[in-house]
Amino acid sequence: MSEKFSPALRLADLNDFIAPSQDCIVSLKAIKSKHEKEENQEKVKAVSKQSQTEAVKISLKDCLACSGCITSAETIMLEKQSLDEFLSQVNSEKAVIVSVSPQSRASLAAYFGLSPTQVLRKLTTLFKSLGVKAVFDTSCSRDLSLMESCNEFISRYKQHVSTDGGENRSIFPMLSSACPGWICYAEKTLGSYILPYISSVKSPQQAIGTAIKHHVIQKMGLMPDKVYHVTVMPCYDKKLEAARDDFLFSMDCGENGHDSSQMKIAEVDSVLTSGEMLDLIQSKSIDFKALEEAPLDRLLTNVDEGHLYGVSGGSGGYAETVFRHAAKTLFGKEIEEPLEFRSVRNSDFKEVTLEVEGKTVLKFALCYGFRNLQNIVRKIKIRKCDYHFLEVMACPSGCLNGGGQIKPKIGQSAKDLIPLLENVYMQDVLVANPSDNPIVKSLYDEWLGQPGSDKAKRYLHTEYHPVVKSISSQLHNW
Image 1 (cartoon, helix red, strand yellow):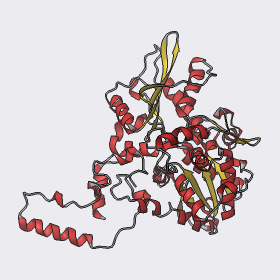
Image 2 (image 1 turned 135 degrees about the vertical axis):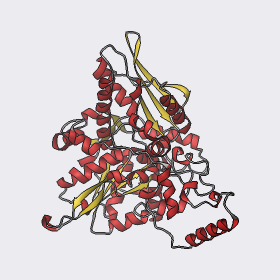
Image 3 (image 1 turned 90 degrees about the vertical axis):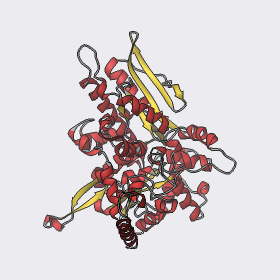
């Protein structure tokens, strides 16, 4: 599965995809020559005996993303993250809700020669024919995440800029948090020195998960434990994200409150990739282009008078949205024209600046791909990074090039596919400011209060945890 997880995960271990990661096995190389031969032989026998025990069943919650134990079959078929599990749930007593990402929408649109709106309507027809209760659009929750990100950036900027204009460089730049490959790499490899720089805002996937399980299902007359929420994403790393313990919440499971026991509920129960959606369509011999186009579920979908709407930017538009908001809020600069990001080192590292009275007051960048990511991390570590915000994505070309996207057709190169996806992505989608989104406004009015409120922090923000070697090495006890 080396080509499907993000580069940040694939390159984290020099041994990836050649042999199991050193931390995931009892290595015979660990037996040092200083031990007596007889003692060595006893240890080898012990290891051999251990290997004969019954295989341990793992889930994605146990995964450190070292990729040492992940193969193409195991990745797809891990429990609760497979097509088979999804199909079994639509035939269960639970209400299944599906949330579709705009990147997956674009991938399917490019493959079938359709528009994003056509794809979402046809997916709604397909899912509901299988028994799905509702189909939503994560462009809506992306707007929610963007609102929180804008508020967090302004708070950080104001808090750490002194009255004389001097900045405390130790907390800049703020790094986006929507890419699970980047987050997992940061937690596993970079440790506590880099984690405070990362935005605490949940990704659009988890934002829609918490909105559905904590608020929207009440309007639908459902209970959290009776809902199975599936997302369709461009990235295999999203499966790891959905399985994080941070994104579980407790629910009383006793009848009438008499039983104090609790059950854990996931914000997102399962993740299917764009490629797995194509597998589903092909396995059922569905003529996708001929499917009828069903009305869209408006409860959590960015649709107005038949048109989809959202921000531009194939990786979520974080840098552009936060930049515009900061320019207006901090410096009174309304930016109407499209932002022009200037390539610096390569096409996957671009920056944009705002100058006021000849002084650069905002400096933002897009940082895609593992090599660019490493360069930025080094600069932050030595306090020589002068950016205020970076939109960080582990995959070169960003989320549209995620490992879970549909692969190029025969005769089509990956290099040709990316610009096609970029064109299709906004083909019939209207550009709209997240702050003008009526669905987001209603979520704040009815549920969260306002951006940055205590309730918003409770539901839409998260924490990160360094993963140290001593933890991963415990896996040899399996």
